[in-house]
Image (tube, rainbow, N blue to C red):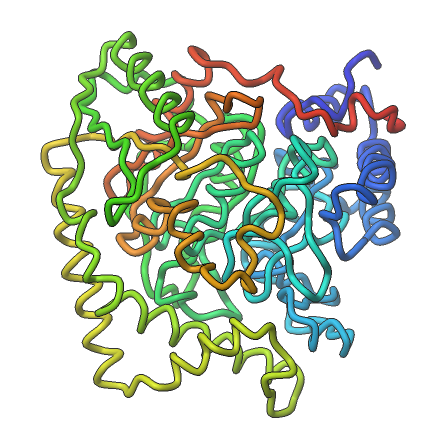
Length: 487
């Protein structure tokens, strides 16, 4: 075959199998070879599942879904990490040292992905419990960005992002509780969609992650893959506490649908008076001009409540800290013993202690405060269709800059990731697209935010930008297609 598998998206790889130009096993073997050739440099894959993947790809029982035979990686966190019989360490060294194996059945996310024909070949690196903007856990060490190995791929889905950007696999699982899909997608030059709250089930084993903030999804190289995988994952399961509105047609049908003339707000600032990097601003303004050229109405404007910094201390911090404490307790349940500070990175334990300091009435008041704030924000969409912002406040910095151990890590995180978390709190869908790059050639993404339940609109406009500002042929210096990995 003449196509290089490392540069094909998941839809194209699936088509290779359907045409009979390659078998599922050949796709899996090629992906394994790419990982073996490059992962000593990037350190994205922490749990290999190569033998099991070979057996599944060779089996006549491999599902004949839309992605039959396509190799896939799961993040070692969230519902996607709940693969029965697999190591599941959540970036935590105590679970790593105990060699903990998850044995409570596949999650709905895993079941749907496997039912679509994806073959899981391993799990990817993640910061401890997912609570970081960078993927540098003490348990497994740092994952490196294929665009510049001295830089972070961001987090917490940094392992998945680095793997997709380097061509290991065409798509990988991620979770997003505060930008954890969108941050690494922007940092690594990928498409990353945070879906509406309740669009994808986190069950049946999990509850309502982060009070509904954290959602499941994927990192891809194309808008069509993002839509097609969402068609696989979307849909309510019994007992889901929140269910997103149904859509009249499949998400793949939205990719080339006419969005009409839209009202788009443009926001180029950060939060709390913090500036956004000039390369990020320039890329966002360039995307705004393209949208205007496509016939949309773009005006400077955004929800006034974005600037309400008091909400952070009064509402967001208590909920986040309590969530950290609950996640720490989950590690203890997995270990079957009481945990202590030696089982965690220092900052994780500190945040958990803060969370334990809030009584129940204080937590309820914080949750009410979050709801009041998010209603003020969401009301802006009564007069607008989309909001356009930079995905990140800066391009990805050097490894170590965003580490938990940095004395001013909280401020550094806000400077780097000022706007992604807002939409986890509101529950709205947001997509990042790799339309630009910094002066030194590092990807810069822009983010589009829609009203709750309107992934269809995001995908229509994302497809327009993909055509007008294409990124398909842009690849990082560390990539399987140029590394001589066996295809």
